[in-house]
Structures are given as C-alpha cells and as structure tokens.
Length: 385
Ligand SMILES: *Cc1c(COP(=O)(O)O)cnc(C)c1O
Image (cartoon, rainbow, N blue to C red; front, side, top):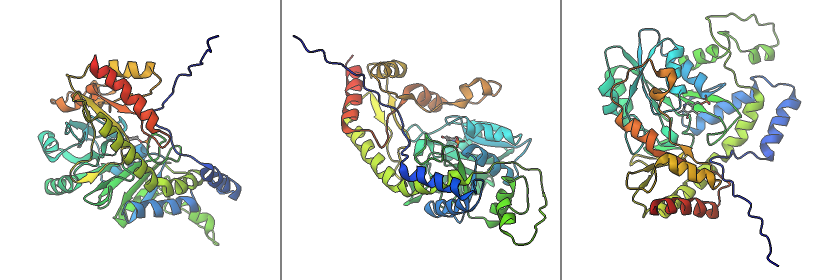
C-alpha cells in the first residue's frame, strides 16, 4: 500500500510582529492600573524611545501619519507652500503635506537606496519650497549629513519620515540623531509595534512643548498633569488642535517592544546577509544593501528585478504566492495613485523603475533558514526559465 503523504502547503508571511507574553502582561498591568489614556507609561516610553534614537525629546502620537502632520504644523507650513517628498513612499508621506493645505512636489530617488538625494531634491526645488520630507525608506537611511546640510543652505525645513527606521544607523549613530524633527511608526508592519502608534523626536524644547499641546486639543496643561495636581487646575485651550494621543496601554506594549529592538535588528541583519549570499550569483536580482554611510534595519528586504531575470516582478509575485510565499510588490509610488492623479510631476524614472520592478521578500523573527532556502529555490527556478 502506498502511504498518502499529506502535503501541507507552506505559508510564509512577509512580516510577523514579535509579540510575547511580556507585552500581554504589560498591557494587562496598564488596564488594571485604571489609567488607560495618555499617562505615566506614555511619558516613560517617550523618554526611553528618544534616548534610544539620540534625541532630547519624544512626543508620542497616534501614528506616524499624525506625527508627520504635526511636524509640518510646527514648521508653520500651510497653503501656498511647497513640500518636496519622494513619490516612492507609503502614501502617508505625501498626504501629510495636503493635511496642512500645502502642495506636495515629488522628487525622484536613488536606485540603490530608494531615497531622496541632494540632487533629486534640488531638481524640483522652487522659491516656494518650504520643507522636505525625506524618508529612510524601508529602513535604509538616507544620507543625513548631505541632506541636512543642503536643507540648511537652502533655508528649508527637513522632516525625517523615520516610520521604518527604528534601529537603523547613519554615520555611526542611530537614524534620527541630530534630526530637526523626525516621525516614527509603531504599526505592526514596522520592527516594533504598539498596534497603532507613532512618535515625534526632536532636540528643540520649545517645539516639543507646542507638539504636546497640538496632540492634545491645544490644552496648556495635559489631562495627566491636571489629574496629578492636588489643586484644581483650570486648563486653557491656546489654539485649535487635535486629538492625536497614544494610550497608556499602547505605551506599556511599546516599552517592552523597545527592549527587543536591538535583538530584532541583529536577527534581521543576519537573515538579510544570508539572503544576499544565497542570491549573489543571480545576475537578474539585486538585493537591497547597506549604503556606504550607514546600516539598514532591513524593515523591508527588497530585490530589484533586472530585465535578464526569467520573469517580471508580477509573474514572480504570482509564482511565490502559488507556493505559499507572501511577498509584496516594492514600495508604492504616490504619483501613480488615483488620489494624486491631479498632480503632474516631472520625470520620475527611478521611482517608476523601483515601484514596477522590485519586490519585498519575507523577513521576520520566525523566518527559518529552511524557509529562506525554499524562497530562494523558487527564485532560482524563475531565473532559469
Ligand atoms: C508606515 C509608514 C507611514 C505611516 O505610519 P503609520 O504609523 O501607519 O501612520 C509613513 N511613512 C512611511 C515611510 C511608512 O512606511
């Protein structure tokens, strides 16, 4: 009799957040404490996160998107102003510009890093340019020394979209160190998560005070401080603002996650190095790498498909999906989306190449060497076609 072997299809997700019993207990502690809105855990998370990325102040917010919005508000950006952004980014980068009534202007990116450069920004700069939002794309740091210096010289603000960059480094320091203002994400697709959530980091104390007010209805004293005071505190509302607060339940999870960051980066970098080795002889595939000036946390491990590869990006995605591998298209390009159909950007050839011809391979703490061999085996079959 022939034994029937049940071939269970392998399922490899592109990303899994690392959430353990410690996070569950921390969240439960916050709930049991009775204080679930923004409070002492948020304050601690702000301090510890800011210290981790080398910033003087951290202001927790509800997401990176709301953080980017507030960053533009404190820079005084508004209608009539232009803000240069990469089209090659998650759409929130461009959307934040529209939230303040300003005009997003798309600049092209560097093929190797997927990031803005001094040259690509300078190409689309006009007298109305007031700020640049540069993204550490997929965790790959942009050249912070070059872009900060150029932005200063042009007299424009530089906001760092560090959504994906927790644990990345540039010039030997954590991404975010020395940033005029940076915004971070704790969405589960990033290295550390609070479910939803974000952080703004900066060194300027006055701006930090205003940001705390802007995230909490424009109040001159936080609800937590009012509660802690023995005396009645009559708050004032100094400007029209927002409710962009993080909860203490989220911050409790974030504090535990922060303790995992260094280990996660180390593990991701080891897995990425193994992918790079296994793929080294495939001329048609170019894996993302560290730039000369820094190290990526490999939040996204993308490969660029060259014409000599045996399949197009979409064919590769389809074959991977058939075999249970959840890869993803490369980073999106905002200017190709219906929401930005009314924008007529200049030429963005590298952006269009990267978004059309790259794909993101699974990379997470639970990925095994065997999973990697399986994924690379599929890519090798495709290359031989
Ligand atoms: C994920 C992401 C965002 C949005 O982060 P949220 O916390 O989900 O708002 C913004 N910019 C970039 C580059 C991102 O990858």
